[in-house]
Image 1 (cartoon, rainbow, N blue to C red):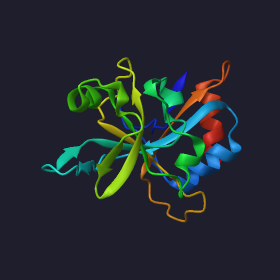
Image 2: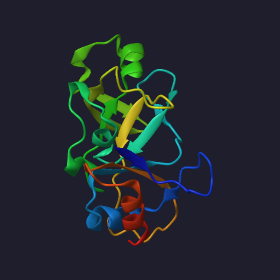
Image 3: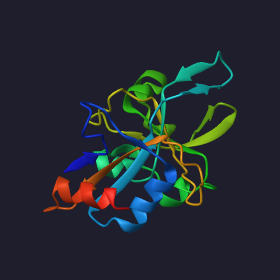
Image 4: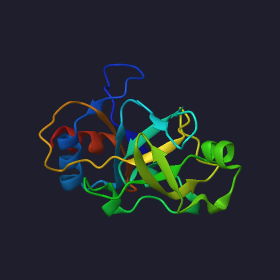
Length: 178
């Protein structure tokens, strides 16, 4: 079962949290097989490959994001843990729709460089067509959350895949007490 942090007093309201809170949950809460953070808002990125810049939808996600939501790579792979570290390599996973639109479904894009906002990112994977995020995303970038951050701004959303036999009430209690 996948759970997303939310405010039970508000209907359809997803609760944002801070990087330090996410890191604390990840280190101490043991009821999730996967726990992921992802950016609460999409500022997007600019594709700067020599032609006119194109604004792409982008989502910064922690390494376990794909496991939480059951996404898999059609070509290549998903992020490695070390790529999600603050000093990790600049890598990108392409959304399926973007890959079809921009690269005409060419499987050889894996390993190529994608220039985004003045930084060169290695394309490490392409998501399968059955992963349908809402809203659609062109590219996924590692969140690179700093475990020593003192920034308590609520800038990420957190989702987890609970182990079997864990209730939502138990999960909520453990998260609230951490």
